[in-house]
Length: 113
Image (cartoon, rainbow, N blue to C red; front, side):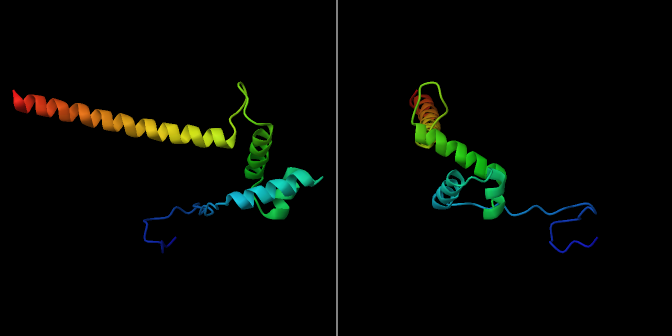
C-alpha cells in the first residue's frame, strides 16, 4: 500500500480514525434539552442529532447532577468540577514557584558564603 500522507509506511489493515468533534456548551445544552423533552431513548435522540451516544448520555447525566445542586456525598456539579480544575492548576503553579525559590535561595546562599 502506498503512503501518501508523508508519515511513514502504512499497514494494510490500518483504518484512519475519525477526527474528534468538539461541541460548544450551547450545542450540549440544546441536545440535553431535546433529550429530556423527548420520549425517545437517548440512543435514538443521539442518532437523530448525529451525536455520539455515549457523549449525550454523559451530558444528560451531568445536567441532572447540576440541576440537583451540590451535595456533600454526591458527584460534583459542573461548577465544582471547574473550581477543582482551577485549584489544581493554581496548586501546580504554586509548587513550581516554591521549587524555583528554593533553588534560587540555595544558589544565593552558596554564592554568598
